[in-house]
Image 1: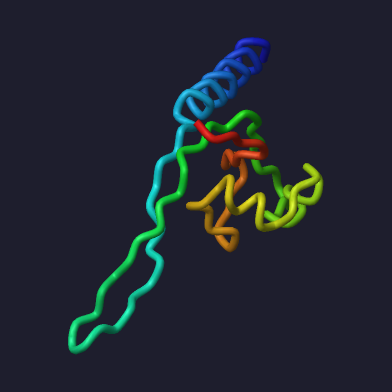
Image 2: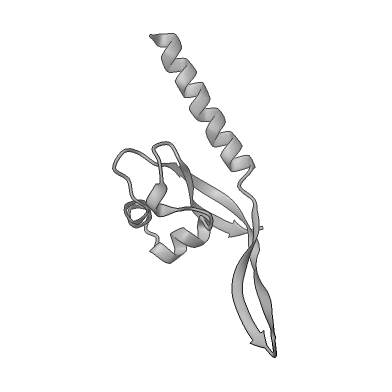
Amino acid sequence: MTNHAAAALLIASLLVAVTLADARITLQVQGGSMMEGNAARTFVKSVPALTCNKVHGFQAGDTCFDVAQGSGLTQDQFLSFNPNINCAKVFVGQWVCLDASSA
């Protein structure tokens, strides 16, 4: 039993380390389109690179709103730290960023 607990702790630690090491996020958000004559022009809004400083693993019953509120974040702040999250499909163990700073 002790070996299983130690292995689970090691795996959880590795997941946190990998998440923190890979927390730099650079992305582009599709902004929409503008019509000009017969051609539609797509414009892209750049989002600054972020470094995640604090992570949280979802637990049974957690929602994006509950995690954000429990961390003192607004929903908009939470979503800006986690731009690729689908709050309707979060799962137990999914890592999210609760504090980020510009790189």
